[in-house]
Amino acid sequence: MYVLTSEQMKQIDKKATSEIGIPEVVLMENAGFCVFEEIKRDLGDLKQKRIAVFCGKGNNGGDGFVVARYLLEQSDNVQIFIFDENVSASSKVFLNILKNLSANIQVLNEELLARLYHERFDIIVDGIFGIGLVRDVEGLYRKVIEYINSSEAYVYSIDIPSGVCSDTGQIKGVAVKANKTITFMYPKIGNILYPGAYLCGKLIVKDIGIPEKVVEKISTKILSREELNIEKLYRYPDTHKGDYGKVGVVAGSKFFPGASVLCANACVKSGCGLCFLFSPIESLSLHNFRNPEIITVAIESKDGVVTFEGFKQKEEFLKRLDVIAFGCGLTSSVEVEKILIHILKNFQIPIVIDADGLNVLANNKEAQTLLHEYKAPKILTPHYKEASRILSCDVSEVAKNPLDVALQLSKKFDCVCILKGARTIITDGNNIYINILGNPGMAKGGSGDVLTGIVTAILAQGYSGLDAAKLAVYLHSLSADILLERKSMQTILPSEIIENLDFAFKRVIEG
Ligand SMILES: NC(=O)C1=CN([C@@H]2O[C@H](COP(=O)(O)OP(=O)(O)OC[C@H]3O[C@@H](n4cnc5c(N)ncnc54)[C@H](OP(=O)(O)O)[C@@H]3O)[C@@H](O)[C@H]2O)[C@H](O)CC1
Ligand SMILES: [K+]
Image (cartoon, rainbow, N blue to C red; front, side, top):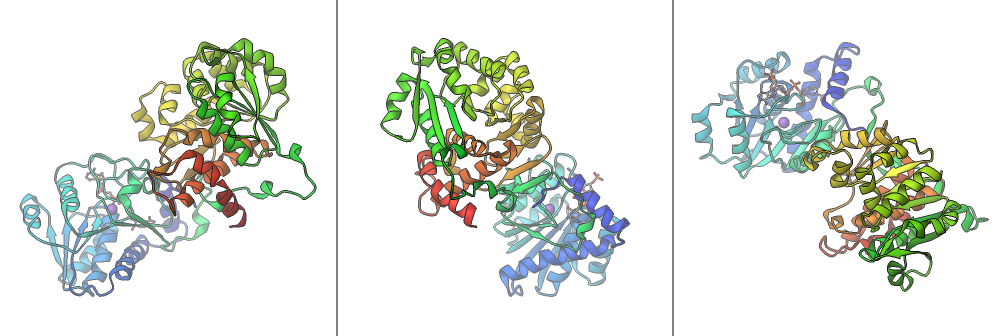
């Protein structure tokens, strides 16, 4: 499903009205009716319900007037609160209808607001701002939103909770916390990214009658099963391990042996033909006992960390493999830096760079240039902090606009970027996918190592970087969601996410 910016939604609206000739008031009527239908479906008999509808000056408020008109037919207590008599042209039509119906319409001011704190509403409809919010919410608007949030009523937001930026999901000063949000035609980015996604409560997407033909291809989509390329997972009967790719995982140190265990184990569990783990001996000793499928290659180390010379002794072997995963648990050291630079200069193998590999990129401009020029497929898997280090910005900047950051990284290095977060973003610089699966039980050290293992193994099975990234992110979070069906967020472990890939693969393949 597409996810739209406010500008894209406005263009679609505009085309529906100017090219197809559907009047704006018809769309507004449909939008308002959809919201009413949802309320009616949730609550049934509304007769005794005390309802407040808050309407801003724009078309979001117009939708609110339509909702109010339908609610008036159902309940004896519907109060409509406006900020200004001077509303948008289409909204005016519906405001006039309400006036003709002698509806209870009150213009908000400080005094009225103070009185509202002594009233009790069962339902609040939030039609203050939609996709037209352009600046921080202040003054009376802010106070009204604070009032809505303090009330015990069940809150329905129209299109998007007022105060949430529809292009980023960020709060512009203050925002409504809704129980349910009814958005129109397609979700907006602010409905999907946090904190907007949380403030929406349950999100419902409703068709308001805009013909599909006015919708041009949108590059941002929700990552769903339909978007995955699962054909390549099909295994012909007459095959052998060589058909599924040989992976080299360069990972681990005396300090983080577990990272290499998780990454390599996720690799073998995700279907690659062979997995070789290049690690210092100190890290491999833990490993050998746990994962008999993994072929270990000891790299000479110093103080428990791989050395460049040690790597060079084994590099001919690594060069013969199909995909490299680089970075998990290596630690940050000059030696690690030298190794990555050497790989980027001398290899031509698809590569997945995570953790300490990303730290090399953050610290070394030469590595950045080499990565940009590296010809084979490349996938970066930063979390917000790693992304901020590479782009030399504050992590809060990444959180404010993760879509832009993922695009920037992808373009900077001509790579596929998996920007990991509560909503992981995947992009190849053109297409953007937002992952909505997964749960906070994944917010634990080791989850990232598991994802790196999965994506590397899938890449090795003949996938493009983008398709591998999509499939891996989906499987990783689906596995955690399946675990949550019988475990709690506190107890889910990254190693269990690997074990549970059995079921995630099965669901993805069989539907
Ligand atoms: N297909 C559809 O999706 C349809 C959507 N509809 C609904 O229309 C809104 C969008 O309506 P629009 O009029 O463009 O915008 P809003 O209603 O969200 O808000 C615009 C008004 O808000 C004022 N504004 C903006 N930011 C602030 C702020 N921080 N503080 C105070 N006032 C603010 C703005 O005032 P200006 O001074 O900037 O002019 C506008 O008055 C969409 O979300 C849907 O709900 C339609 O019904 C049709 C189909
Ligand atoms: K709203």
